[in-house]
Image (cartoon, rainbow, N blue to C red; front, top):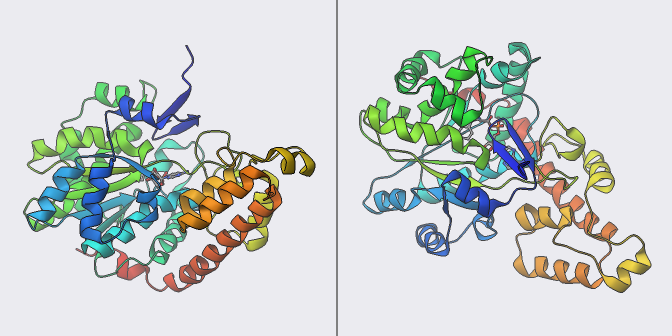
Length: 374
Ligand code: TYM
C-alpha cells in the first residue's frame, strides 16, 4: 500500500496527518496542561503555541521540572545552508527568540555547512558558503541577544565539535542509521556520519561547562529522527537527553501537501522577496478555498479550512483572535472574496518582511558577535 504521507529529514511529502505522525514517531502531544505550565512562567503564550503550530514534544515536563528547581536550560536549533530562507524556517527560530526572552535562555544555533553538501548532488562548498552568510542574517534579524547566542558552523568549529561527534558516532551502528533515515549501502559515508554532528550541540554546552545543563530543541518535526538517535546516545556519554518541541510545516502556497521549500521558489515566500514578488506569488499560486465565480462565492461562501491564505493568517500573520474569527466567518459566508482575503495576507506579509529586511541589512555588521569563540 502506498503511504499517504512521508516525513523524514530529507523528504516531506503528501498530506500530513499530524495525529498519526505523533503515533508514528512516538512523540507526545503538546496538551493544555503543558501549555499552562509554559504560560505560568512566561506570563503569556506565543501565537505559535496558542494556535498549535507547535504540536508535539519530548520530555518537556522534565525540562520544566528542572527549570522550577532552578536548573536553567539552554536552547538549541539549526539551519543547514543550501539556499534562501523561507517563512516556514522561521517557526522554530521565532519560538527560540521568544523562549530566550521569557526564560533568559542561552541559545546555540548550529549551521551544519557540510550537511546539504553531503546530501545534495550538485551543491559545492562555495554555494553553501554564500547561503551560510545570508542565512545568518535571517537568524540575527529575529533579534537574538548576541551575548547569549552562539553560532556554531560545523567546518569552522570542527576543532570543538569533531571529537564529540566521534564519541556519538562510536555508539551508533550503520543499521540504526539505515533504519532511521532510509540510507543504504550506496549512500556516501559522509551522509552516514552526519547525524553525529547534529547531536553535538545538544550536549556541547555541558561539555564546556563541565556540568549537565538541560537542553530544549525547537524544531520542525522532520528533524525528530536525528534526535531520536541522539537521545539514546547522549545519556551513554554522561549527559541528559535533550527535550524537544516540534512544529508543523508551513504548507507550500499550492496547498498540495508537503512543506514550503526554498527549492520550489514559486510556492515559497522567501525572506528576501520584494513586495511585488510576494503579491505575484500569492495572487498567482496561493491555493484558494473560494468558488469559481464571484456570484457563486457570494451565494455559497468559501472554505477557509482549505484556503492557504487563511492558514497563513492563522498560523503566523493575524495574532488577533477576534479579527481572525471575523475573517473566517466572512469568508465562509461569502462576504469576503478570495481577492480580498489574499490582499489582507499580502499586506501583512509585506509589512513583516519590510521590517525583517531592514534588520537583515543591519545584521551584516553583527555576524562576528554571534560566532562562537572558544
Ligand atoms: P533546514 O535547514 O532544512 O531547516 C531549518 C528548520 O526549519 C524547519 N522547516 C520548516 N518548518 C516549518 N515549515 C516548513 N515549511 C519548514 N521547512 C523547514 C526545519 O524542520 C528545521 O527545524 N538538519 C537541519 C539543520 C539543523 C537543525 C539542528 C534543525 C542542525 N541542527 C537542530 C533543528 C534542530 C536542517 O537541514 O534544517
